[in-house]
Image (cartoon, rainbow, N blue to C red; front, top):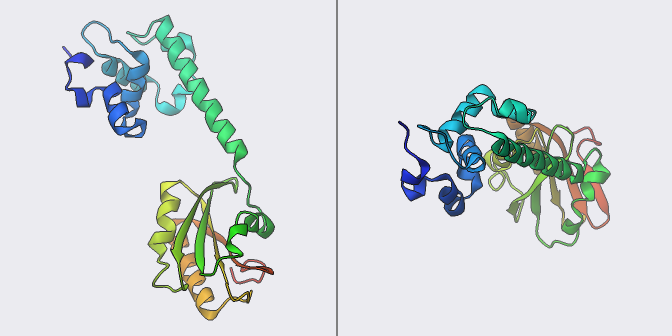
Length: 224
């Protein structure tokens, strides 16, 4: 017979774990168990959640009906409705978020996200991370100071891309001197990052140099 959730140590109970460690640290079964709330005779809510996920993996669960949910022993009508409502709300939230993301499909669209670089007195090296629809999902400052290969290592650029499931990256940095032309070091650094991206199957789409008077796109100049 499985332990009831209330018999587990407090730090292992899904609700307490969510409060203390955050929802992102719970397994799919633990999150679903919170929605199921109570188990059935001989099985905890976590056991019922695991049974559900065995029959309906997480990708299929999004499209499941309340009737299908009720074929799982331990999930009656009220629990099925609760699960379906939570899944629908999550889908709507994701859809709303995706629709609000900026699309970076041209150098001008990229520059519009980097206007704060124009007045910087130091060189800022920025990476913009895009999904498969060219929407920016994340932006990070990689380094501040003189742009050198020592300060900008491929792992610093591509680690956030992996973490945020980006399919491509756009690089940018400013020239406080207002000289829009890429230096030899800029070119060599970009070539190095292009090679690293190919190994990881993450495209480097462009590298933009920002000045007070405009910008230079490596892609437009044929340097990528």
